[in-house]
Length: 184
Image (tube, rainbow, N blue to C red; front, side, top):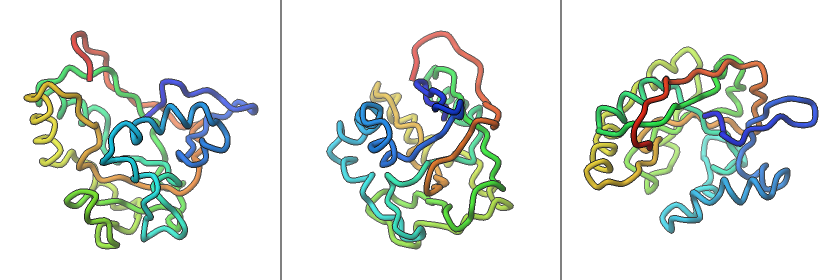
């Protein structure tokens, strides 16, 4: 997603940094971005969890991407009862991601199963296999709506993990239109 607080660096580039790099480069921003993990005891250790298919990488060392179009995410939220705000994403060219630094987290049954079987080889030609909102994610959205709770947007959604920063300066931004009403 396009961070709402995204600002160009000194050279005018827009860089998506993994959480752990933010800690070094922008400590204040790191505090803000890491709050989503620190505010929930069950999510506290996520940034430190190792990714078995990437050498020397934890969740906090990767930029997390998705192959799902923002309009499809929004439709799943609307179908569940939410009226989401506009969703904006950088459209990253999958061919530019180094397969040695990229893997797919298949989001099996949750964080308990994070062995190598929960990860897939990154192949830009096969991303369409991961481009649909899973049924379990749609059900999760419906459950959160019935409980009047804000859902985590990417629960159950396959994640594309890229180790290291991504310069998105020249990538287009794709989005959904803005709806009126309550927001996710």
